[in-house]
Length: 141
Length: 151
Image (tube, rainbow over all chains, first blue to last red):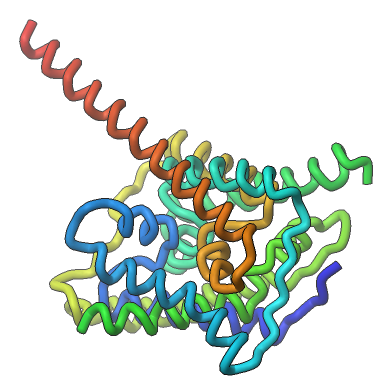
């Protein structure tokens, strides 16, 4: 059970959007985590800003928790092995799909890209069906 | 200079993920569990992010170029094909198994828990495997095209 958090979620969403707009304004790039991750590990000129972006993204929760003192809820309700398998599927899937929630779901949808709209519908539907299957069909809930 | 700017932009992204609840797999899974413990919060994350990006892009993309580059790098693909739909569906299956997506998992590393690290490690392995296969398929099609020309 998690609480409905309309204010935090809307504010957090707006910050994600602000980050996407700033990355386009300064670097001319889509704020898609898939592309930024893949580019950060590939040889080439674009590694620097990607690694800096990743460092900032990882540092943010640390800074919010420790100096700022904001509590950030975290719970991973599935076995670690399943999380590991899920990472593998996500890595392969986003490579062929060309993006994830941030790249397709936010940046691509905001550009009204047909590819991103189709990709977002596809992964949202697959995620919903997977959650339904694991929580209600297989678990017998 | 460009590196100095990407760091705070990443900070804003990570703060948005953390504050919104996207770094919490339990909350993400509950958003998709419409038939169970439904938590609609993530609709507001997506709505807030989309509204700001939609308006912000319209202002930014009117400019001739970004601050640190000669041009905007916008995806040019138009094709709606099997890799797009199938890859995205596979991503969704993975997302639904754990509640982690790439943009949620990377900032979650900063929460100092084992799960985001494990997810990120296997996700990078998956990206590497897919890139290797894609590279191999591309090289093979170039070779076979060369064979046909040679014959």
